[in-house]
Image 1: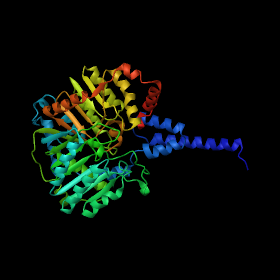
Image 2: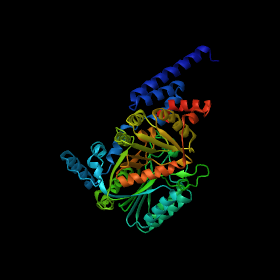
Image 3: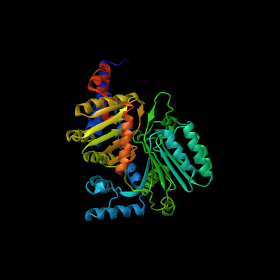
Image 4: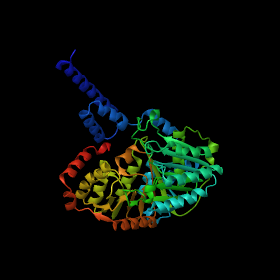
Length: 490
C-alpha cells in the first residue's frame, strides 16, 4: 500500500505538533537567559526533533538531584567557615585591616566577594606567575617530587603524550613512597585519551576518577555533556597550589605542530588561600569518586594556616550548580572599579550582555580598555566567534590586539592594583556551564607584574583596525554573523 499525500500530511503535522510541544517544554523548563532560550527555540524550529535532542544533550540544565548531590559534597574547613564569619563581623564594624594601603580607600571588591561569594580574604600569600609551560612544569615537577603526605590533582585535559607520561611517572613514584595521590580528570575533556594509561597509577596505590563520565562507556553520550570541570588545580601537602590556564600536554610547552607559539598564564600559590583550593578539589572529588572522607581524614588535608607572603587573595568558584554566575559577577564588579585602565586576555571572547555592558560602561567613563585575543586559532568556530564580537568592541572604542600565536591566558588587571588569574574564559560557557575557579589579587606589585606581561605580549601582537576588520571578505562576515546569532549556545 502506497502512502498518499494525505498520509504524509498527517505525519508532517504530527512531527510539527510534537515539535511545538517540545519547544513549550523547553521554554517552561529553561531557567537561563532569554537569549539562550530564544536561540534554542530557533534551533528547534528549524530542526524538528533533532533540535530537541540537541537541547537535551547540550542545553538542558543540571537536574535538582545532581545539584543537591554537588551541594552535599562541598567541603569548607572549620577554620575557613569561622574566618568568613569573623570577617563579615569585622566588615560591619569597619575593623578589617589590609596590608595593601590602597584598599582602605577602595575595598568594594573585597566586600562583594566576602558577602556574595563567602570568599575568605587572606593576605599572607605568595604568588609566582608562569607565562610558559616549560617553566610551569619544571616547578610543578620539583614540588611533586618533594611531596611528603598528599597530592591532589585535577585537570580538564590530561594528555597521554611525553608531558603527561612524565607527570604520571612522578605520581606513581610518590604513590609507591606512601604519599596519598588523587588524580581527577574531566570525562569529555579527555574523551579520546586511552584510559588504561592511568592503570599504572592505580597499581602504584594512587586513586583516579572521572568527573561527569559518559553513559554506557560511550564518549559523548551524557545529559551533562556541556557541564564540564574546567578547573586546573594541584594541591601538594595542603601548602602549595598550582592553578591557571595550563592543562597537562605537550602543547602547553609550545610543542603543538600547528598552534604555536602557545602563550599561557599559570600561577603557583602559597599561603592560606591554598586551603580554599584544597576544599574545592575535595568537594569535586567526593562527588565524582563517591569516596566519603571522614572528619579525621580531612584533617590531614588542612595542615593549618601558614604565612608565605603579604599578597591579598580571594578565591572565587562557580559552576552550573550555582544560582548565579559568581566569577562573572566578581569580574563585572572588578571592571566597575576601574578609573584609568583595564587589560584583559582570553582565548575565547563570547560573553553575555552583562559583561559587555560592564565593558561599555568602563569605556563610557573614560577608561582605557584593551583586550588581547589569539591570532592563531585552535578551533575555527571559536576564532570566528571571537571576531564576531570584535565588531562590537571596536564600536565601543576598545583596543583589540591579536596575538601572533595562540594566547590561552585568562587574566584581567585593573588600574595597577586589582587583578585576577584563573581558569575562566571570557565566554558564556565558562561563565555559566563550566566548573571554574579564579583568584582575585589585591597587590599593586603583582598587578604591575601582570601589566608588564601584557605590555610584553603587545610587542608580539597586532592592533585591530576598522579598515582591516571590514576588508576580510563577505563570506567571513556572513559566517560570523551566523555565529553571533548562535553565540548563547556556542
